[in-house]
Length: 331
Image 1 (cartoon, rainbow, N blue to C red):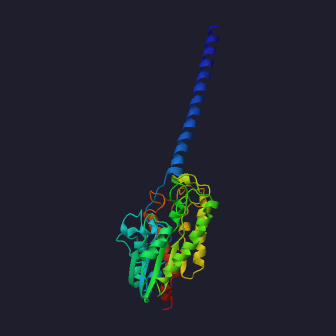
Image 2 (image 1 turned 90 degrees about the horizontal axis):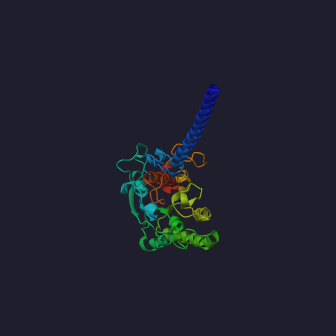
Image 3 (image 1 turned 90 degrees about the vertical axis):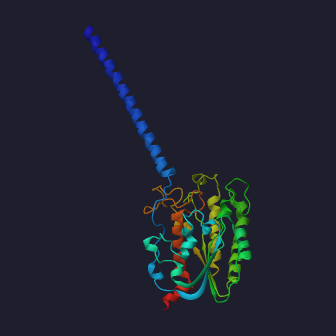
């Protein structure tokens, strides 16, 4: 009888130990899953590493190994904080200044690749204003862009319209020039007004350069990588945001197509995969060769690597389309 009690006690202890082990195993698995989830959430949702080194497409060196032209050429920047350079590490790292001259710490693949290396008589001015909208850009053109002599050729680089969309970040009711949170129906007349305004800007720029000019206008990038989830960039939800954004970019493309001297620079395509979802490898926009964030801390402007990429796509567009660069081909 005593022996049977001892066996029963041993069985009870064994069962209790098994239950403890089971509970411990369940807690361990749950803890591992929780930690894994937290690490994954930080890595793929919250983390926005910017990376290092050059960013953006390659620029063909062969195009910049000979002088393009000895004409008097004036480069003018018009637009918002992207052209003004907010978010760049230093003044000589803005995309506008890098178009003109290489900074002292230039990447090896870009040394000697800039407009001053191929245009012997080059002048430049940047009229861009941080925080400005397309309504203000029209005023800048009318008030500050002067008529040039007939022997001057103009190269105009522009970014316009992005602030029309993102202002005032959902903090006030949407209106023209600050339409964040608008419905597509509400925004339609503002989109059409932007189209008309853009055409008027191009016409007024042309009139300031009787000797001819070319206009290179960037389309509008998307810091959500095409997902449209505004909270991922710390803004209120905007149901029709992507649709309105697409309409603005469509207006830029259509206005450019109507004019042989206006060319769209593909910032939207170039920045895709470098926004708030840059670490999410399962998305079609993922860029495995450079899965890093190209935006500044204010969300709407590029960081230093983003400006490098913008400089490259503008140089590629100019070297491909400009009548100045094609003079090299005829030599």
